Every structure is written in structure tokens, then in C-alpha cells.
Image (cartoon, rainbow, N blue to C red; front, side, top):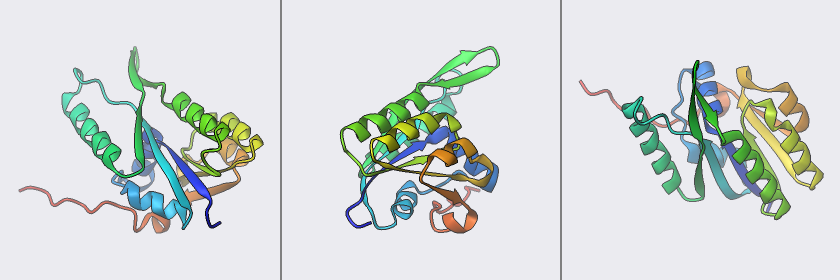
Length: 180
């Protein structure tokens, strides 16, 4: 629809693991990906939700992720929203990321900031937020890889895009040559 305003909400860790699982490649070009999802519609903003690794526990991974999020936040119409990692006996758990995504999607719907929200996640926990956003008269789309789709989230969304190799073929960042 011409003039349709779209906000994209990306569950960063969920998408990263989905891309690794289905394609063994997390190196998505997020600008190209957003443009493809928009399909000619008007972008309001892309929100990318993630948590940085523990700097003391894994300084190299922290630095790499921090560099990635800083570069992403410098892109036009991109915002990075950081949650936190909490240490548990079984490892680290991401906290504050999903709730931030859901609250932002709801708050923007209440403010009439977009016509359509695209939720990039396979996490069924977003289904209730999607239901409320739709009651506000907004459209909600979902995109995820085949192995990570949530039937519960899909059933609440107006449209689902399965991220296949064919769909993503022109959305990958070029591979950097290895240094030998």
C-alpha cells in the first residue's frame, strides 16, 4: 500500500540463532533486509533489540558485538535497544529485550506512529502484544526462518514471511576475505 508506514522490530538474538540454525550464516545486511521487507512501503524506523555479552567474561565477543551494534545504530532510521545479560547457574540469560520490544511496539501503536509493525522473531511470547496492536487497528506481520517460526505468533499476525534462502539471497553482507 502506497504511503503505508512500517516499523520493524527485530529480536536480535532470536534472528541471529535462527540464521545460524537454518543457513549457518548470521551475516545479514540489515538495510537490504529492511528494504526487502518494506516492499515499497514507507519505513518509520528499524528497532534492533539485543544484549551485549559480559565484558569481563568474554571481552573479545563483547567488543565484536559492541562494534556491530554501534555500526547498526549509525545507519539511517535504525535504533539499537539494549537489554542486559544476567548470570544464572546454567549460564547467561537475556533480560529486558522481549519486554522492550513489546512495549515499544504497543506504545508506538497507541501514538499512531505506524500502520504496520513487522516483528522479526520466532518467539511466541509476542503473540499477546500483537493481539493488542491489532485491536488498535494496526496490521502486524511476522518474519522468521522456517525452523524457528512460532505457530502461536503466526496465528496472531496478519501475514507471515518465511525467511528462506531464496528470500534472503540478496540480503547477505559480502564475505570478507580471510587474512592469511
